[in-house]
Length: 266
Image (cartoon, rainbow, N blue to C red; front, side, top):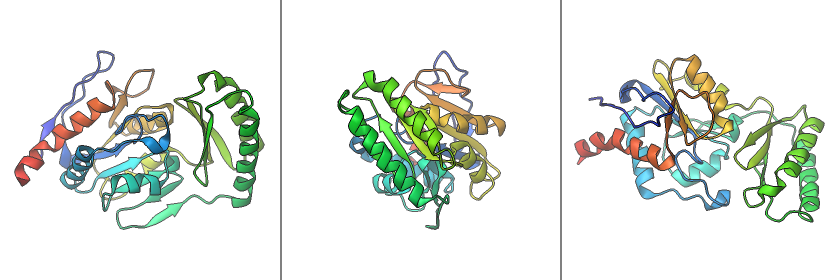
């Protein structure tokens, strides 16, 4: 039997409505939403209780759970290890479906390889002035992290913007929290939301998307257009219509959604 529940929201956003697990499509960002932001992308921690919560939510929703992340599909999959989980990686440039099917946007491998070489050369130059800027290569996308060198922000953004313009036929710029990415043209979390909501088991349900960053705004826009539930995790301006304080608050709420299922299975 479905259970109607509602999480707490901040004073800056309307209280979240009650929802029915059997009629909701759960579309969730990963970093800063399900897990706390880590100093380095590889240092992120996925707790056993979170894995249990996601497994229970996946079962209770009839498989209508998807992770939509800037990370690669392989990265998310290796951290969550949840069979049948739908994952959209690199902002939607690649997707892994419940049946194991995998699709990726077409990309010019030669152009992207040249772009990576130029990024690494630029990073070498930046390192003479700033310590702590890190290049993360995702194969078809590239992220420059400056969390450990906030004073390098302007220089990093200048480099990223210049290369994005030079390779405009292949990538576009995506700013985030202490990171800027060059992601494939056509990759959009909002497009992922619209596509998934036309496919089973998501179609016919109310879309719910939770995210924390600028990269999630296109997904909020898509969910709002579908008259679903857009949830901003953390502070800052957003077009999301609801809000929770931080990733810990979202994890706690998700656990309350699945708690009745856990008790029923005990």
